[in-house]
Length: 283
Image (cartoon, rainbow, N blue to C red; front, side, top):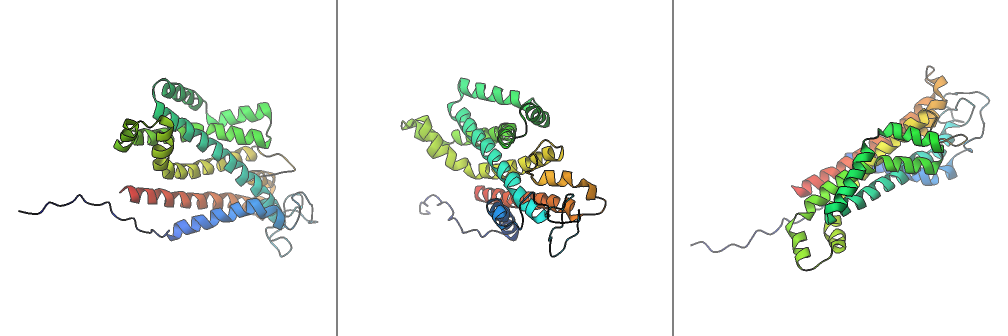
């Protein structure tokens, strides 16, 4: 007769060191966040200062990233523009993911008529093409920074809501949530203490994805002339206004495009590492 065995204990959590891709993504992301905060302080020149007698100059010691179509230093323009590309996208992503998270958890936890009202309202917003919505709003209210932030944030609320609601519905059906409700805990307690801690990892990964989408959306609007307006400029505007140097391979076109590419690649690498770590813990 074999002795009774105790239930298996949950496996001990091991300290998982981030891989090279995750470290690279983190380094790139932190670099551009730092440039958003400190870029204007370390820029060699003011964003609108004409400092080169020539235009669309190549890379040189005086102008490490060349000069633009008016003779302005591209390094300074990119550093100043990081405030708008990264800052506006980050603010819009916070609005989109934060609103989607609150609405998704509320719909999943309370259910019933509240779930139906929120879900049908979100479906109405989804029915409007995002690019068309952005163009109409910007054309109607102008392309000021607050308008761009709110427009981009509203556009990506539906996707964040669907992710958060799906995750919250799954957690809300688990036994420990039922136990919490059975012992008399209110819905606010369940949302704060039970649902939110168990979905925060995937939500953060989705937040990074929303950020990348918003960067590309704002860059596209700026490329069409509907983004940040002169004398200010984000990276999409820098690409558009220097298109005359495209055939010459001028750095004024290539460098802002490279900045957009490195930012999106860095954030994507970071997202992949977060998603991978969540998947391994779930397994």
